[in-house]
Image (cartoon, rainbow, N blue to C red; front, side):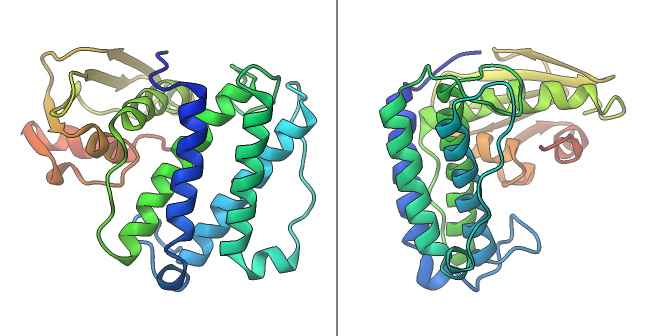
Length: 247
């Protein structure tokens, strides 16, 4: 698994994307979030704040062996989701900055049980949801290139690979190539029989999707439809991505 961003860069990204998301508050609270069906902007903010609060608690306990439940969220926090998110982001960023990347910490993956894993996951969590929020109120900005590349790698290796073992019937129906147009990076991905095969290169595939690193990262999390990218080959293979396990 490659690490394209430093720990410090990931922490900065958490702070920046959290600030952008909080900055949408006036428009966002009652908006519908098209990429999160059934969610309002308020629910989106509450979700991110809750995830940040949860992982800040894991960092504080420093126990890599088991999940620790944080204190219940107060009614005051939940009534002011923008303030809650801003405060939760500040605590998370400060905690990560104080700890550095190598302190023990539980996470649900069972591997890389340290604060570095948390920094990566939270940077990508808030990047996707910042996009969701901006999409709900207008034109969203892309995810930065290196963060998007990091996110594609995480989507494949941290989420999709283990999840496919629990979904042996999930299949793309053929290999798919994700090819970046703004940086030299490509993946050929095959998913079938509960197994994931990934080659980090361009190559023959039943379907090829070409776009920016940001677009491909967002596609990998079903935020962008394959028709929004340059698509060659079998469109059904590209569409099948949306039915793979998604965390």
